[in-house]
Image 1: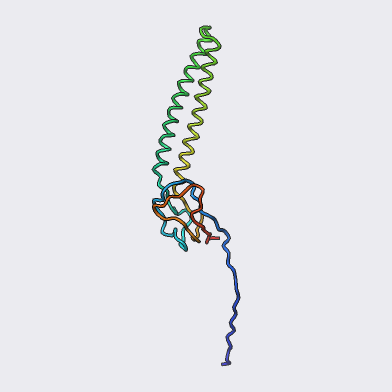
Image 2: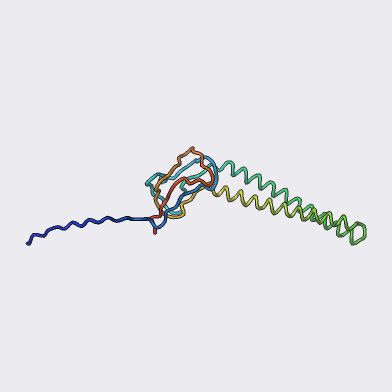
Length: 166
């Protein structure tokens, strides 16, 4: 058999991930749990909870917003009945236009308060959901700056991730 000379080929290559992103906390609070892969060099799956911020304050905020919504719903109901009474009395010529206008104003105010309260409930629900930070794709942690018990602030990057499934 003929001697085969091995040829060594050396080249320099740069591999760049298609998707690199900063992981940013959307709510503030203390971290109460972290995924095992949430360390520098760690791997994670799409849909995995990477870390969780203490939801206690956000649960309370949702309960308070829900209570305000219930009060606003009651106020709309009362204002609607009052307005209907004023319309009935006006048709019988037992009430003035001013009384009807006042009842209509209170009804419109109650409805606006209800819409505001409903928006606050929606916001509180969204914030509560945001306490669980979920991986948007399968990937790896390039770097992280968090640990259990640490306080994270809304809008601050806590890790750099890159996708491994592209």
